[in-house]
Amino acid sequence: MSVLIEQHLALPQFGLVPAEDEKVSSQGGFEAPEINAFGQTFRDYNAESERQKGVEEFYRLQHINQTYDYVKRMREEYGKVDKMEMSIWECCELLNEVVDESDPDLDEPQIQHLLQSAEAIRKDYPHQDWLHLTALIHDLGKVLLLPKFGELPQWAVVGDTFPLGCAFDDSNVHHKYFKENPDINNPNYTTKNGVYQQGCGLDNVVMSWGHDDYMYLVAKENGTTLPSAALFIIRYHSFYPLHRNGAYTHLMNEEDKENLKWLHVFNKYDLYSKSKVQVDVEKVKPYYISLINKYFPEKLKW
Image 1 (cartoon, rainbow, N blue to C red):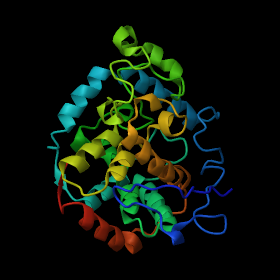
Image 2 (image 1 turned 120 degrees about the vertical axis):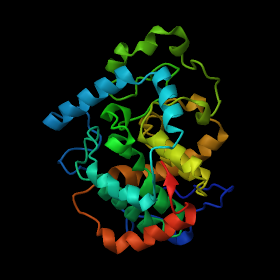
Image 3 (image 1 turned 180 degrees about the horizontal axis):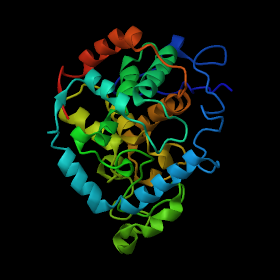
Image 4 (image 1 turned 60 degrees about the vertical axis):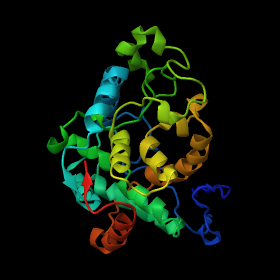
């Protein structure tokens, strides 16, 4: 099955317009498979397997423990970016130690997923180097699972993200477990808008804490020159209730709506490029090092 990428995408403020030779069709470009490495459909949270049981338990813990006040504390703590200093590539190599227990589609080391996503996008969008790099770094925040970064529990690092401070939308995976979240006892957090104004912009919304928001904070604090579309992808790529189900759109502003077009492009490669076929790291490393040097300082504070 080939997935066609619509070619009306454009972000004039950055000149991010897919070139003519970057159009994707069934005759060329990345083809999205119909099943994952385990022989199941992608993001199937109801399939019967031992791995699926673990995934459901993950979401039970996540939905109970991710609260508005918890996220506020975590953003304050990790926004200091005082854990260590290292380069982007050094962080990529650290991900060899990480496996995402919330992902029903992959049990490979994370660096392979990063490179698989980046290489698939590079094939279809050869001139959008910012998008290649965004794919490479989008999951680097998962280092939060490692001892040097606090060894946070899986529920505080991975999985789908969602807003706090307003009602939990039914489109959230395993929504039933939110009934045990303390925030449902606060009437200010249980209406559609909650503590927010319609159209306030996602930048003003408190999202569940995890690798997405952490990597966004790291990129911002270290002065990246990546465009806002890249930062939007990094921060919201796990926000599946929004970009897959169309939930919470009432909180978006106009810039969010423009950036969401690029997140829809990215998501195809993030989700469907997961494979047991590994990328030759040493072969592609020089190209990605050149992109890192273009958009980031040599060393970053984490």
